[in-house]
Amino acid sequence: MSSGHGKIAVLLGGNSAEREVSLMSGRAVLDSLNRQGFNAFPLDPNNTRLESLSESGLEKAFIMLHGRGGEDGVVQGVLTHAKIPFTGSGVLGCALAMDKWRTKLIWDALSLPTPPCLVINDLSNFQQVADNLGLPMIVKPCSEGSTIGLSKVETSGEIPKAYKLAKKYDSVVIAEKWIDGVELTASILDNKSLPLIQIEAPLGNYDYEAKYFSDETKYLRPTSLDSSEEKKLQALCLKAFKGLGCSGWGRVDLMLDKQGRPWLLEANTVPGMTAHSLVPMAAEAVQISFDQLVLHILESANVE
Image 1 (cartoon, one colour):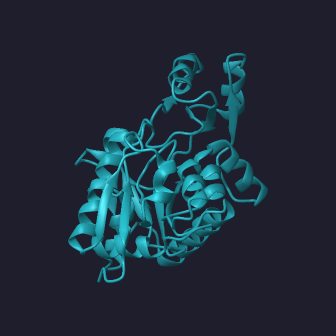
Image 2: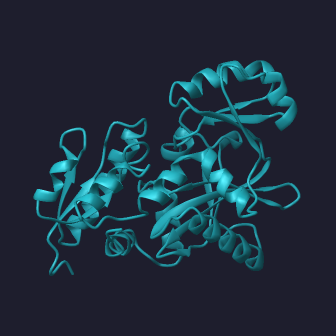
Image 3: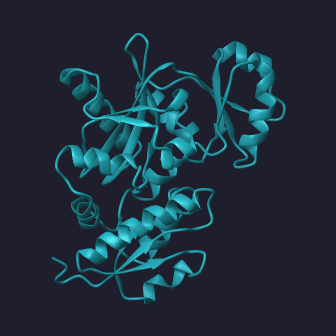
């Protein structure tokens, strides 16, 4: 199976707030590649200068870096310059998807439904923000993932604390209208949408703990939707993914409100590949094993 393949670096770790998850995802991918006979090795940018990769004889790079430095176009730019094929989206798609505010600007321009949001700062009138968006609302860093730095606020008096937390992770903070309803995710593989997964988290709070460690979070496959509705949502998510310039593989998260209307939340260009991760679950629903999924992603690696 691995005939003809040279060295493959699995990029993992890094120095973002999502380092822990990146290490888990990267090790799972590395184990899979080794099981399949590839000459794969781990590479943590914290310990190696990525600029030296052009001299390393790498055939491909499998990017499992979550968050800043790995999911925002930075490492993709380094690999493009080094002419090393890499997995996932290119510089533009990664940079736009990581920036939640600009993601929304593009989706708005494409007339794709996404919850209203406002950029807030030290001078913002938080009561006015609450009046404009309604309560409850979400306050989160513009360029973080895995719900890091995110808060759900129920009253305007809670906004300053939530803003302070989000600002610890990013100089740009956004407040977003809260959508109450069904939480869904669409995994993208080979530029096609896999079956949707419906998420039911403990107390309706799909936070960092619920995403990666909780055994109480429920993942419904198939979802409670009828097939025609699911196909429409799959098409919407694929359009949203491509609209950001994303390609290859990834994930788009969305909500269905009480009236059944879809609302796009965000796109992920380097989703998790842990035991609790959603892309492997969606792949399994169409009889794609974890090893086959890893192989699919690896084979799609290219240079921009």
